[in-house]
Amino acid sequence: MPVYPMPNKLIIATRESQLALWQAHHIRDRLHALHPGLTVELLGMTTLGDQILDSPLSRIGGKGLFVKELEQAMLADRAHLAVHSLKDVPMDLPDGFELTAIPEREDPRDAFVSNRFKSLNELPDGAKVGTSSLRRHAQLCARFPHLVVDTLRGNVNTRLRKLDEDQYDAIILASAGLKRLGFAERIAAILTPEESLPAVGQGALGIEIRTGQPEIARLLAPLNDAVTAACVRAERAMSRRLQGGCQAPIGGYAVEQNGRLHLRGFVADLEGVRMYRAEAEGAMDDPEALGDRVAQALIDQGADRLLAELIQRPE
Image (cartoon, rainbow, N blue to C red):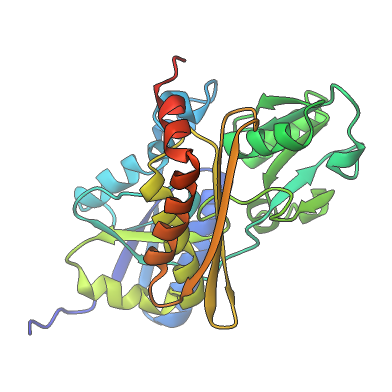
């Protein structure tokens, strides 16, 4: 077998948002601790998804807009790896790339943020709630049809500023991002998975490299958390089978229970009127099979027909 020398320097491609930089610095610091003497640098980049802030992601190309430029930097040998929020990573990676490590997950739940109200139940008729997620939009509309749910784009700081300017009565954000950036005190309430099922991969980081680089994969291997990786692989397999992309409200959340995986998923229309739910349990060592099984249960209810309608709908 060929022997590959271990590199003494790694370059991480990262978006330049505050949260993305936190994530990249976090992985850099963990690599320094694991491999004394290894030099790790950051290559900050602005992606198309960061530049277009006046349209929903579903209209401008989906979550892949946050990763394409980072992959191009790796192809051009300007970077060795990229650190992503895993919920922003398309279910199918381009040929020549792989997710080589998935570190331990932060809180995957959604957070209710408001300066005047302590929970969704307190919001009055006509209150305006901001979110960038079709998944959150559908679940909010299903539970609280009296609320006005409006699109909210921008980084975490921008979204909090818009709330503070009274453009919204409340906003829904990922708990993980708020906690990582030191904004945990802004959270008025954590939404349970029963109240708002998380997005596939929410709260988890994914480290992407080019395939065929075993020396880099070995350096990154200690960062992988087996339980988190199994949970996320099940969620991503479900979403991949459904092929909904960013154009449909899809939620998927897996947890480990007594050495087994338990996965819940849903597919809904944009207003949460039609909502299909399914859940199942499976083996830790075959998470993709569990994801496929939950996806098939949703398809059996009619989720495939609903997804086809949503994907083909005119903008």
